[in-house]
Image (cartoon, rainbow, N blue to C red; front, side, top):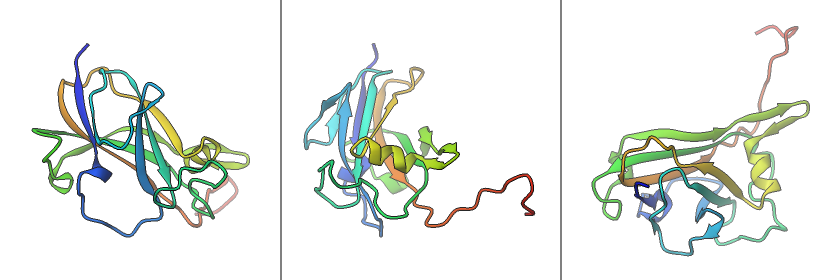
Amino acid sequence: MRLLSLLAAGCAGVASVSAHATFQQLWINGVDAGSSCARIPQTGDDVTVEMHQQPGDRACRNEAIGGNHYGPVLVYMAAVTDARTAVGSASNWFKVSHMGLVSSNPDYFGSRVLNDNCGHYTFKIPANLAPGNYLLRAEVIGEHTHFIPTPSTPR
């Protein structure tokens, strides 16, 4: 198996932005990788990102993404020369996973899946990814209001 070196963009000193949730932990094949940001998973392994609305709050009794923050969960990666020193804002990101509207009766978005799974979202590292160093970025887009047209709804 080829090895990848991942660095969670949230741990890489990326400039702060105004956000409701933070990407706090990374899991590889179901094992909490701890507080260190650099990981070396095998290509194709399961990677779980853990996100919560409040920094440091990993309690499952609280919704990971509370309130009316319904929307998709997205995960991106970027190939870099050195994951420990790379600058995320200067990287070329590509999407490796997403979960949008899971069900429309009732509306059930990826953010609700996070809430049902204590802030965890699991995806597979693409098997065709070249070996090397990568940054990993996860995000939840909170669509505070959403409109899903029906066939009888004019646009």
